[in-house]
Amino acid sequence: MLLLGKPVSPGVAQGLTHVVDGRPLLTAAVSIAPLGNADVELQRLRDGLDLALAQLERVQRQLYGQLDPDDVAIFSSHGSLLRDRHLIQRIEQRIRDGGVSAEAAVGHVVGELYQQFLSNPVSLLQDKAHDLLDIGRRLLQCLSSGGRSEDEPVARKIVVANSVTPSELVRFARQGVVGIVTETCGHKSHTAILARGLGIPLITGIHSPAESIPDGVASYIDAAQGRVLVAPTSADHSLVDQFLAEIERSKQPPSDQVDAPVTRDGVRIQVLLNISDPSEARGVRDWQTDGVGLFRTEFLYIDRPGWLTPDESYVIYKQVGEQVGDRELHVRLTDFGAEKCPAYADIPISRNPSLGLRGIRLLLQRPDILQAQVVALTRLARERPLSVTLPMLDTLDTLHQAYVEICRFAGVSSRDKLPFRLGTMIEVPSAALMIEDILPHVDCISVGLNDLIQYLFAADRDDEAIERYHDPMQPALLRLLRRVIDACNAAGKPLTVCGELAGDPSLTALLLSLGVRRFSVSRTNYLSTVQLIRTLSCAELDGLATDVLRMVSGNAVRNYVAERFGASREEW
Ligand code: PEP
Ligand code: MG
Image (tube, rainbow, N blue to C red):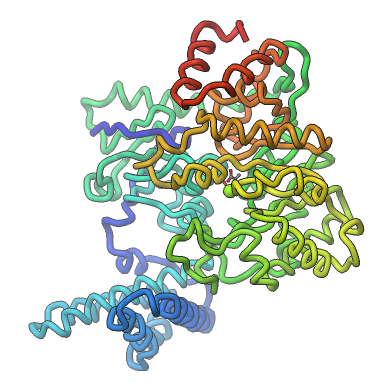
């Protein structure tokens, strides 16, 4: 069966399918091997129970006042189930007697009770079966947040799921997944960004894949073309050959001869990398890029049992620093909030996550998280040059508060004594509009187009249904960008455009023409961005921005740019 979808993250792979929604989590848990002896597994169970209870209490607190008290009560009844002495003793017994993992014991015990309750004619007990299943799932998720290695079920497999969250993506990646097929996944969502950064092929737009694709069948995925070949038969041999040829081609080592990003008229453009995982930093060495322009640190906290300590953070940052060498390294403070939260986070869940507490605002309310990170960054900055970037800055008031806290945790009396440079993301329109006033207080600017567009046009970046409103060709954005770029140039402060659109070939010429000279792009876009830059000439692009900034509609800009591109790229 050949299925066609939309490419999200390129790459080709073959493997057995692993359908996430189609097979009961409890059944899958039964085959998870123990990490240690019974004492280790009993401790893991206790930690998992504590975490699950803390999550339930947090959800409950958040929902009071938003939901009917009867609806909120369901969470307290789930909490009582998780404290049920008989249930816990039964799970513990299974760990001791069976020598199994905490996950397997939960899978067995909850699975058995579920069946018993479900087959009971009393409807109240049938309802209880669903509650049990729910707490079983929650407990398993809390247990698995500790992370596993090759013995995980998705190693070398193609995950099929209706949707995949960023934390699931990180977990699958660490387990060695080779490809992902989903029904929904926004192109600029963090799941998509992570998949591209980590080099995991991802195809979306396949209708109900968890229901239509069988589990455990040999399959092929060519995410550049959006094609999935499921359980091929002998009649599909020529298709299989095509997939295999692509897989062979993808194994060829990339040419180590990477040209410098210089335009035809000799302007050296800086092209840096966006990374979310330390493993991605090797791209800096492989391609001799200008460094890491955006290190998204929030994903380091996902798929772990708890918060990173300053020492643990330092080790990771140092590892990245070693890959980056003497090139630029811009580490962004954690941008928790929205869907980017680890399972153990005791962070409020907002009714509207993109507009809720996140980024630097959240860090100012959670000095414990900020402190651990600043302490680790201060230590690294005493060893190598470093730039620290504030996420989601909104106002100067927040900037000043951030300085006070950062100086306190870095152990310095004033900001000119900080051992690192301090930059800020410009991704909230209020900050973009105050750029001239923000610039004297920071060393550099990173424009985050994903969020700037989301907030400027009130268009959720993760919602495919309104993707067309997430439009970088709109004059409102281009005029705002012009203002930010001009202000940075006038102040002599470097500006880097990052976010997924920084590597979008339809925008490169426009951004150069607006005066952008620094791009930070994901790994998958690096080589194509450099190649494209080498075909362009800044001198010839000069008039483009002037023409486009006079236009009043996105379609007019799009048509104009397409016409110029369509004619011949040499013309630029
Ligand atoms: C952005 O918003 O463009 C950005 C770079 O940050 P993130 O994608 O991590 O939100
Ligand atoms: Mg952002």
